[in-house]
Amino acid sequence: MLLWAAAVLAASAAGGLQDDARAAAAEYGVPESVLLGVSYLESRWDSHGGRPSVSGGYGPMHLVDAAAVPKGGHHHVGDPRGDGARPMRMTAPLPPARPAEQTLQRAARLTGLPPDVLRRDRAANLRGGAALLADEQRRLGAPLSSDPVAWHGALTRYANAGFANEVFEVLREGAGRRTDDGSLVRLPVTPVPAFRTDTGVTGTAAECPSELACEWMPAAYERLGKGDYGNHDRLGSKRRVDYIVIHDTEGTFRGIPTLVKNPKYVSWHYTIRSRDGHVAQHVRTNDVAWHAGNWDVNSRSIGIEHEGYLAKGGTWYTEAMYRSSADLVRYLADKYGVPLDRAHIIGHDNVPGTTAKTVPGMHEDPGPYWDWARFFALMDAPIQGDGESEGEGEGTSVIINPDYATHQPTFTGCVSKTSAKLCKPQGAASVWLHTEPRSDAALVDDAGKRPGAGSTFSVYDHSARATAGQRYALAGTSGEWTAIWYLGQKAWFQNPPSSPTAVRANGPLVTPITDKVKVYGRAYPERSAYPSGVRYQEHAPLPYTLRKGQYYSLAQTLTGSYLAAGSYNPAKHVTVRGKLRYHQIQLGHRVMFVRADDVRVIS
Image (tube, rainbow, N blue to C red; front, side):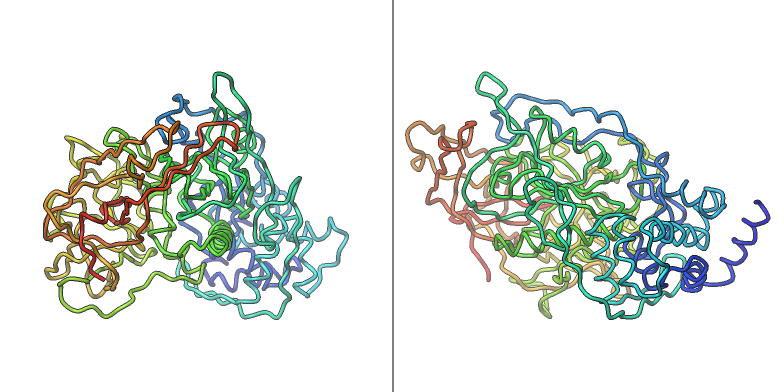
């Protein structure tokens, strides 16, 4: 066995991934295009240095070893609705683990190769994946056909119908890229039909594009006594949706069915599994889920959880999950008229706190390792500049957009939140912001997130970070450095012409009319708009102010509203609409709101 493993390693070193895939496909009777299509969805043909994914998958074929899946619970804690009116609920523990699909061990049995070789050797990993696909075809009683179309059933058995459909989309589109181990791989366009099967749905059909074959896995909705209930609000009519919020689960998909059925837990609309992009829906999109920690955002958003961890354990998300999520978000954005930009497609880490007290406890997921540029490219809405802005005057913006693969900033905290040990180098979507245009200058401070303490390089601390797709007002340039207005100060990031981390852009900005303009985490109406019987929601300013001479990007203008939904009975819900107008701005890492009367718009 050891001699055979050595021979595999030697053969791998001699050729690239394309040659390895061709040999594996021929050995097991699998069409090369199908093997490459599956591998592309699993890993984009990358090996990731032998590190496991968030769901314990290794190598270009994402062979899963359950022992590599990190232990941990779901990350939602505290006030479930985000309105300060619900009791504190601590994190629910994960249920006992059910065995994950051990594709690594199964591939070892089929190929006769040791699991360790399958984990770390590219050629062996591809052979393992080809063996699994051929085995699924045989179990169907189907021949090992050279026609890719004949493998749709095997692909469905290998993962699910949505994954099989997406493989055929990859074949129809074709693909090509240089992988992280230097291999140049090309998948030519293959003339295959587009599959739109709506299988795999249990119970009431989910709200989903048909190619994803989503599952309906409903969240609990029960009375809990003493006026309390859980775990979402049913409205019964179409609501306004301004945001789609991207989360990560900080736990595995196998714990999701138990969590969503717990009425004392929080809720969200969808969960997407990493290894194959499978989508489960839990709450109707016209209903309000309790996912963002901010009731104003909850009432105007859809929340999507992605199996994974911000920092711990696994280090990469699969292409299958990115593509399923992109298909879903594009579908929802079209349904509700949500713009495909980073002011409306936001991370949980971009949701503002509701009061100064809640700001430090707001969440940080999906974090800097979520590839926003790749995500938006898959939605046919690539992150790019929209103008050749010159100078540094009024109306000039920049959009953060580092090259994810080559941009590898320093982070700590991957071992534990308090660890000072450096994280392993890997691509990231964020840039660090300094007080001066040099790398040894201090990071800018966030007085709300870390009151009385300086910013850190922790992967959990976004106090001094700007992320791909976010638009900021330009505040200056100095050599290879660019400054933006950020939390009331100039914040500098490295932006060399040879490897830019931002692009110039146009877009509306706001600037204060008076000094020390207040900023808010909720766009609530004025007191006079509230009818009798509905409690007035205080306007609680956050610990930030806008100073004269500063500029911030404007995303949307809206009139204050408040959904009074503190009842199990939807008939008792009241929507309060006022006349007070707000502008949503990019103040720091999070979006926030200013009153329209306090600023001047530069369009």
